[in-house]
Image (cartoon, rainbow, N blue to C red; front, side, top):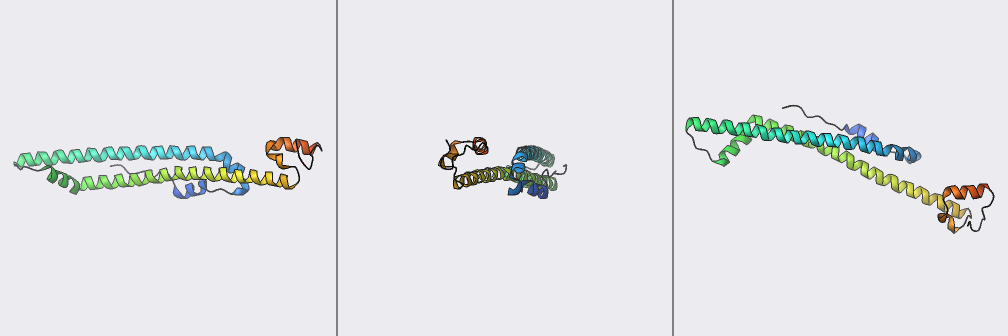
Length: 171
């Protein structure tokens, strides 16, 4: 049985998920590539898990055949329950099952990383929305009217720079 590969380095993932609201634009720009990277790692971990499941089934089948062949050679009748119990007690099966459990953990960690990036995306969107609302509020407080939401920030900046910004209402 081959060894299990842990695709996600937890410390690095923790660093990749973290961001500062000081550089929110940078965090937004790198998010898609990080999400894609961890999604690929998750797919690889899932593939590895499926391969180890297949190996456990294969090992179980080999042990089952050995048990049945030995019992037939000795003239012993075995029930399915006894065969199943004998398989589960075999050291090769136990080792295969332990390896499968490790692969399952690696896959769960990778899926958790992808889920963390979904939460990160939601936080980035909310922080971006809050920043936009704060800028709109500052413009409204500065006296550029309540209709600031109808103008894009670029249009508002052009009007203000041109000196056409009516402090009561911008049309």
